[in-house]
Image 1 (cartoon, rainbow, N blue to C red):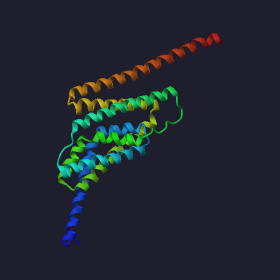
Image 2 (cartoon, rainbow, N blue to C red; image 1 turned 180 degrees about the horizontal axis):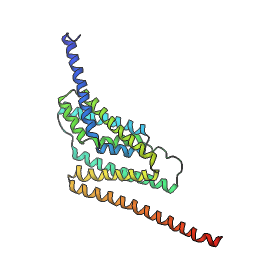
Image 3 (cartoon, rainbow, N blue to C red; image 1 turned 60 degrees about the vertical axis):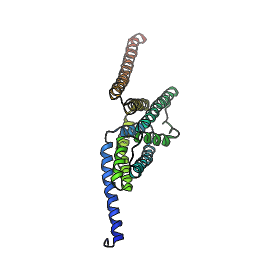
Image 4 (cartoon, helix red, strand yellow; image 1 turned 180 degrees about the vertical axis):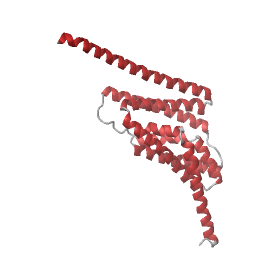
Length: 253
């Protein structure tokens, strides 16, 4: 069937495309394991429905990797990583404040019912993922692959690799969501957004790796200390209330 020159050329093109899909999928899937994109997916899975997060990841991956493939295939250039890093850092810091305010509002109102789906949730996921991916090592790998392999295969493979890797992160987020209280999840999501923003600002944007490590570690330690101190205060208060009830019961009798 592939003896005809035209058909043979088409067969070779299809083979190259599938080879590019498998290679790109493998590279991106391995690169994303433990990457900040997976942590970001877990963070969103703590707040939004899983299909909203997965849809946002798929759309953002197709957009970001489409831009990367076009740059690598047609221009052979690289993206301006520093401006992208500044934009990503600003976006994540805004998300941190936004998530914290949502949690505080829910706590003040003492909501018992299930939280409503925030407006523009899908747009939020898409925009943050696009900003996080542009200039990331996955994007650089996509540009490199697109410059040497079939661009359609690279686009499909990198997008599928991202969806599969972040799909695992969504499962982890769902498991955490079933085991942890809603108020704690809001605080955890806000903290992760804050850490992402600080790391991108000091490391990716400014190039101060040591400062990024020190600042994010200090913030994480302060948050952990705050949680522990709050737990201890709650435990002591309960013990005092129990002791007061126990001391007052004989006199009541």
